[in-house]
Image (cartoon, rainbow, N blue to C red; front, side, top):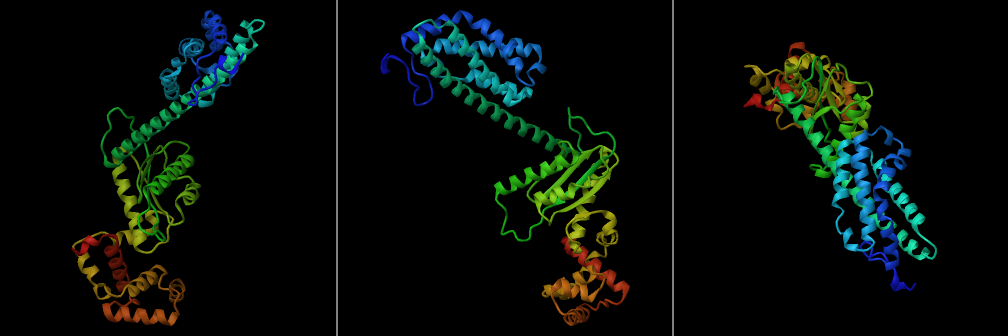
Length: 407
């Protein structure tokens, strides 16, 4: 047989029309299509791990029908290459299997084993002198299987991405509703205690706003860290600055959560947790965790895990009142001296330890004394007086935690 008497794969991967001898061999197998499909669905594929657990109707109806369609398409396509112009049928079935949760490796192996079983059937039917026709069909079968498996894998993965995005948006919608105190129709509502967490990402060392790609990558990694720590897909509303996480049935964050988050979000991450006793209490817990983080940052507490107990006095002093604007105004003389404000903040954070303050600010202790004296001269606050120390701390917290108190 010459080169022109049998097919070669087309440049786009579709099999070209076969020689008359190969087409005749394929036609003799068409009467076996139904039997081949049944044997594949209820015999050959049973050797695959996980296949036996599939529902009987999936095997006997859907998988058998797909096998029957694939075998018939190949055998008929042996005579007419245009039969392979559309693989929509296989793509739709792949999307269906993805939605049902069938593993991709299991799905793809049904196609490769099916191709092998069809080749065996062709070999059994082939008679003396048809070796070349069988070889031609074998090459065509490899080409067809390559196209189908590629299309199936692509469709399956596309559907998985779509399903994951849909699940993510559903969880996000539920989380946002819980944080806002709104019911969600048709969604199961948590029963009992709920752990609410707030997180804020650090910004030092970042030039400008991170790119959307960087933000998406960070959020995926943070979501994954929460899911691993709690052993489930947690409800979260996150953006480039941070956000909130809601975990029903939990009252304490796992010990490894902080370390997992440090690996994904960096050492400057701030995290606060509070327990909501009921679903209706979730918005209060969310506001509390946001405030704890804001107060901790405003009074210079290092990034980490913050609790209300850790900043109890500072939290109390930072609550706006009718006197807040007057308290903040005490620091007005320092408005153009940021180095004095930073010295005051650090000195209070270090419990008025001048040497610790000097070490953190990379100054000589005498320089710290000079700055503190200047602060006292400008503001009239005596940092040796407990009352004035409390006023200075309140002024810093009110100014930094809520700039609106001066309006």
